[in-house]
Amino acid sequence: MLSVLAAVVLLTVLIAWGRVQPLIAFVVAALVAGLLLGLPLQKIPGAIEKGIGDLLGSLIVIVCLGAVFGKLIADSGAAQRIATSLIGGLGPSRMPVALTITGFVVGIPLYYNVGFVLLVPLIFSLVYQSGRPAVALAVPLLAGLSIAHGFLPPHPSPTALVAQFHADMGRTLLYGLAVAVPTLIIAGPVFAMSLRRIRAEPAQMFRNELRAEAELPGTVNSFATALLPVVLLAGATLLAMSNAADGPLLAFLSNPLVVMLVSYGVAVITLGAGRGQALPEVMKGAQEALRDIAPILLIIAGAGALKQVLVDSGVSTQLGEQLARLPVPPLVLGWTVATLIRICLGSATVAGVTAAGIVGPLVQSSGVDPSLMILAIGAGSLMCSHVNDSGFWMFKEYFGLSLKDTFRSWTLMETLVGVFGLIFVMLLSLLVSKG
Image (tube, rainbow, N blue to C red; front, top):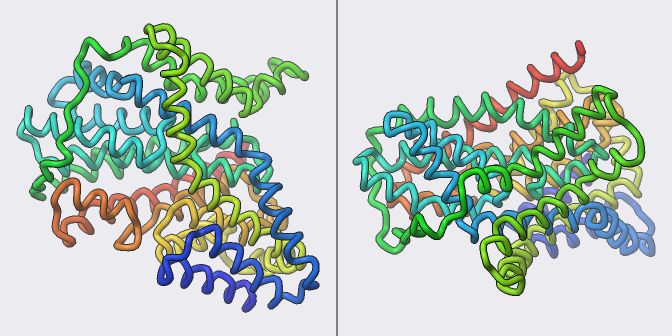
């Protein structure tokens, strides 16, 4: 345990203090862990390569397809159409509720940073039209984006954890939705009511123009295409759970790779070619998305290297057995490890995949549902965002807030997501065990 702790501390120092690129930091930490744990020298490089290959091999296509799918949702104007439709349909008095739903629905296909940059100008537009406090409108929307990022496939961290724990992606998505909705209500519109006195001074440079109404795709098209992966994955999982259908065809169609490929193909037609765009023009967005997702894939690769060193050294099994003996529920342990790493490193993705490598054996030794462990780690990875998290500074600078008001709004919102996320995961675990 001391050797594992030393490797994690080294990883933290390299990334948080030395600003070392995460992949390099993970590889260095994996080398040091291998030496400290007594792994034969000639086997350490092979373990690192195997860990990277095994983890990336099972999810690289899914993550990349998720990135290009989300980029197309953003570039086509579908995300803006979803937002304006919900706000118009629910009316001005329910604007926080509309923004909460917008953040969650748009957050399912869009990666967090893309959704943030895309939707913040919409918030500013609503602030100028309605005169409402900017922070009180922004928090419900950004809570939805954050929860989708931490809990739901095909976002990188939950997808990587599904691969590490050999969990079912459709089941994880269904459980994630069950946990996300009540967590979102509390951390979104309910919490936002306490933020009305915070005054924001949005920087002029962030007040981007929105697309004209005539340039946006239709409402039904936007919603149907954006939610297609969720519908396909959830539908196939429910069929499998009910035994209404079974066999090789369902197994093929419910595979996340097939689901994401079909969803992207449909999006290319409904939001691209079907609206008069040439295929090369549609593919430009895909190229940009793959460039953006590359750093996240490198983080996941590095986490796979460290995990494999722990497995090959045998300490992974010992660690799982020792953690299982602690008088703490396994889900709380997973959440705690992710929270500590999140506080130290700032990145939710790094916190999630690193925690998974440490507590992975606990899933086998304790018999806990792997999908629930993924959600517990996801909740911990969102805890206590502060000055070492890029999201903290994006929120502060976009809305022109003081550090005090940023802690009061952004940090507390993320902490509520983490705490209530764990609470609802624990409640769901009781229902699952009874079922």
